[in-house]
Length: 350
Ligand code: NAD
Image (cartoon, rainbow, N blue to C red; front, side, top):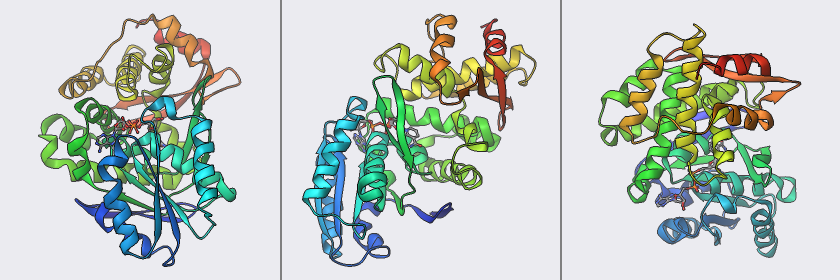
């Protein structure tokens, strides 16, 4: 399966079992033989898949070398980027060379940010290996790192030249991370597609994984093509994230994973919508059932007033107003710009 995202450039996305072994040939369609490539992966993924990607790149005539960093969100910081710059400089990369991001969202966001900024921008390729990265973070060109003050506070838009999605890599993923990705899949269904939502709820998803990835990426493609720089429709992709990010932050990014927090955030937002008569009755229960199927939590004991306080630094917040992503029903969403007072009102009955 294949699709192309047309933004500032065109980016081909290939979804195919075993396609990481063809990384060299695919890169050969974009870069000259002899070009240098630094393959960036974390300490879990590089030992699992690094050799296959490096061998394929070398067989295609590229001069490829690995760069590893410790796995985990704690690594997603500027000091890791500095180490990546040092490696790229030591290897003498120029703007005709490229970076390969091999791994989950942490790797993709960081390697992409290093590519966006080294020499004011060099090309990069994404080879995502978590479900979350395959259906979401590898597509659309958002790159960046966290600051002690919050997640993803520093970054750049930088589109990958190519995304190679190999669903076979999901076989080595821990179940918790698979569930994490499913929370984002539920989100896509909620905001844009009743049919996708029904597939997630009704089907044995491991039998439909390529179709799931394709449908999610296709939704992201459509949204990103219309709003590459996140000023309007792209905000819909943040359904559940306002409260989700707040929860992640309140727990110091330890108790809840991103997907778990977003799942709880989606339930909270749907409840707010139902209470206010904006969202069709019964929607919250449908979301709860979908999340439970993938072993995701649907509520948390954190007091609502603390969650509200923690939304103050939200990137969708400015001038005392915040952009909320609300559902009319499953498959239909919109951005509602509300005051903080209205937000408190909406959450009042939670
Ligand atoms: P991650 O990259 O940390 O990967 C999760 C864990 O799985 C890590 O321990 C990793 O080493 C391991 N792993 C990865 N692939 C594996 C495989 N195939 N087999 C075995 N282990 C494997 O986390 P993630 O959940 O993929 O991504 C989360 C990050 O993505 C967050 O930082 C979030 O901010 C970011 N994100 C970015 C965007 C975007 O548009 N850029 C969108 C959503 C999320």
